[in-house]
Figure 1 (cartoon, rainbow, N blue to C red):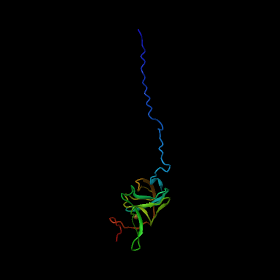
Figure 2: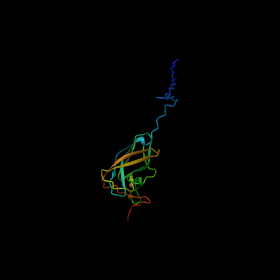
Figure 3: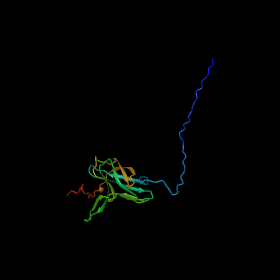
Figure 4: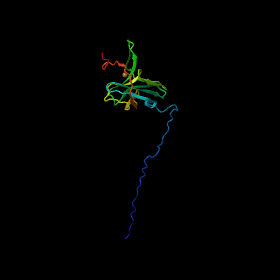
Length: 177
Ligand SMILES: [Cu+2]
């Protein structure tokens, strides 16, 4: 009786899934192409701070720096500290008073330059604080740029007895007489 050792046929399928770096057929791209940078990648925010306030409005300040080679526009800003946050500028009205209002088109930071947000000037306006902002608190902001990229930054709160410009917004005119 023949004992035939049935050798199983090992069908080893070497399914080596295209490991490693695939064949990167370098397309003859012109040498001028550089990786596209988002606006957010060009921006840093320095020395940010928020004015401590019990309720109502407050404002954030700091330096927005643009290290890129193209102008950058901040078109919107959000913060968990207020359901409405605006980009404000301060201008002189016809009566010679300094008033603040929403900056049309947002903030522009020139290529290689910076924009200073400061009391009496441009600032980020918290329109309606959800809770008191106390000195030492950290308030987070998210800037949105014109290319839809975003940048988060955190600003500590501090006591400051200024930045009380009148707001000349339509629906929320706070100038009590
Ligand atoms: Cu304001």
